Amino acid sequence: MSWPRFGTFSIVACDPDDGTCGVAVQSKFIAVGAVVPWAEAKVGAVATQASSNPAWGPEGIALLKQGLRAKEVVRQLVAADPGRDERQLGVVDARGEAAAYTGPKCMDWAGQVVGDGYACQGNILFGPAVVKSMARAYETTAGDIADRLLAALFAGQREGGDRRGQQSAALLVSKKSAGYGASDRWVDVRVDDHPSPIEELRRVFRLYDLTLLNRENPKTLIPIQGETALALQHDLSILGYYTGRLNGNWDAPSRASFARFVGEHNFENKQQNETAIWPTVLLYLKERAGAEVARRTQTAPIVSDALSRGPGAQPKGGAPSAHRTKKSPASK
Image 1 (cartoon, rainbow, N blue to C red):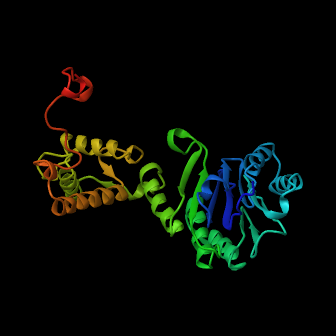
Image 2: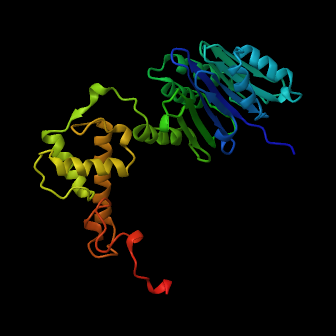
Image 3: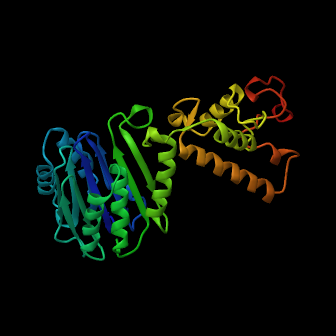
């Protein structure tokens, strides 16, 4: 079977200070994140594209784990592959050394830029400005590796990107024990099919960042008191989590309602203590409360009192389903 080629631009990068490694990629190809990006913390990252050889991903990571440098990994993978003329590869090791390869039969424009700690590569592009702008963006953008990888994608697209258009994008970053459940999979977000996949990737990443990551400066934590406490009580009451008085007194019922909201919305990673809140979570709660008010005013009620209680309100009447003993008519 002849597989379609990837018209793709990507960047592989590693931070030698802590061994965080990642890949960002965009392509006019369905679900590019399922094939191109490979990364392992304190080891390195690989992007395999054009007439992609998926085996280059795990094989490249295995060679890096043996201690081979990026240039040697590229040399070995390319030399052993008879289809190398139609393939493209980017590799970076945890030391920050990078290398790339573009086969002579890759569709124009195809090429790469290799820098300190990263390699940018692409094929079927509008021109060399795509990878050059990616390199410049990665080098000059403030923030951590995730911010810089995303910036590189946006920069490449601004120069035309894949000349066939856009379809999918992905961001994969591996950081030692920093992911969910202390795994190394720190960031793994994908957009498999979308007219503006890089914009959509940024939107999904922002929500992922807000929910699961902890990248904010602790100095920005806001004490829950006064107007902040009152605003939280107000928004939590609209959403059905708080039923007490709106008085700005951050008492036990207020704290309990906020803890339940945090638990139900997967913000456990952002609950540093009971007396302070991240500004991003405060904004998220405000936006959810605003959306709930809009829902009530724009939606016709189906069940009496349903619209006035909020999604966080406890169910009315009856024991939980797991505790019911009386058979329903349907089960007789």
